[in-house]
Length: 223
Ligand SMILES: Cc1cc2nc3c(=O)[nH]c(=O)nc-3n(C[C@H](O)[C@H](O)[C@H](O)COP(=O)(O)O)c2cc1C
Image (cartoon, rainbow, N blue to C red; front, side):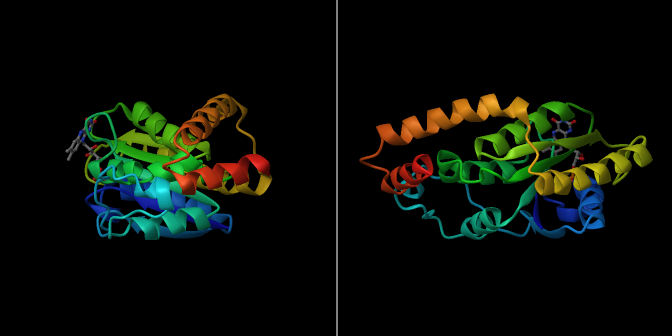
């Protein structure tokens, strides 16, 4: 079982988010999951330029590391999104990746996959950042198994750390278990169904301009 972890802290795995992500990864590996970490600190993901080429051809026109990340997302069984809280949201590095995934979102290309979220903050609002990342996973078609977030108590330390780390390891295990069991997260089905109708409708409206996505939806709706 392949789990891809994407971390979007400029401190890479050396920061607070990396410390918490380490525990989630321990949970994944404890139940036999194979993990790969991609750090947006070292990868180059430029902001989207709204050229619409991804909708037309399925391939982004910007020559950087996005296509590599996309292929890894398409190939994994589950993924973890890890970001520090930057002004009540994800870091700019993570937001750039989210925007570049617009073609994947139009196709809801990660349907059937499972995702977990990791976030750390200086002082709170963890839930809203986790909810945002969860919603992103849902728009890709994936199931969100949940998230873990915490304010910090110092550099790479957290309040009630033992309890937090136990929960983080459980989240990693739950991610793998959900994949094995093909677990249904019924509370997310309504949003996904509505979004599916919205995306297939959008692509239908733009079918003359977006042949790649038109073909994608034709196949998806026929299967
Ligand atoms: C540009 C910037 C914006 C931040 N904005 C917030 C914020 O809105 N709320 C908050 O609680 N912490 C905020 N923080 C603190 C970080 O979320 C926190 O230190 C986090 O644990 C850093 O993770 P890292 O060490 O993995 O980079 C901000 C930090 C930076 C550098």
